Length: 175
Image (cartoon, rainbow, N blue to C red; front, side, top):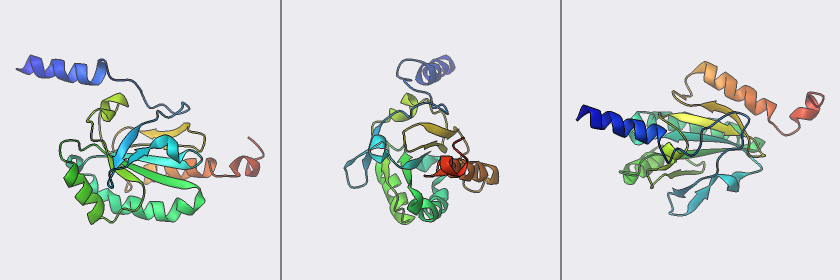
């Protein structure tokens, strides 16, 4: 039994189907999830904006961070910024939906109902995140423990948002 479980874990995280790895400086992989309203949400539809993609699940204990991310979104959305939340809850989408509603989340959000996206992106843990610039290039990746109460994470995120803000190159002399 233990050998079968180990084989499953190895194949799930390293075998076929692991199509992408999230790396800073590379183009963000495009994907589509289902919104709470049942419509497709596609990452590339947000091109032209800086997008923080927040990966979470109702079973990870990170649902309590959604109000902090809502506040972050409200504080930054006027500056060409979107927050895009992806819940990995294919087995219990109603629970994730109720959490989104309970926390009155207004940013683009949905649920991976296929139960495949986490492996396709090479994610092994949640909460995780990536910040994608307006051109679709990954500028920041945190593959585990991405929490708004972590001051180091938030300082890094703010720094990258400042660096990728419209007009940042002109302010820095084109560097």
